Image (cartoon, rainbow, N blue to C red):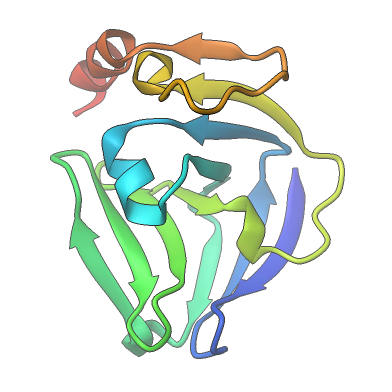
Length: 138
């Protein structure tokens, strides 16, 4: 596990993630692509996360199982948080100098548009597989 600090573009929110999984995921779902204009490259950070500047964090309930947080000052996407477990997934790009990362999983692979493709060899889960997985945990 890795430990790293992150911040939003304007610096109003600072995050310390103490248990970052170096195997990151990419989500191709419609919501993630609409949220950031591209697939969501996310590191799993668990619950051992501290956030300074919480008054600048706006939450959006994006599904029945998770919410998304962003800076209400500059709009930086900060995290995707699971409601039940409290686990955070955070954009890889908000962390400075993370090393040793490896793309491990692609979620909603059947929703990936045909205008991009990654050459990385990863595990993949379709929409049906993701829905079945979350049905057990919510």
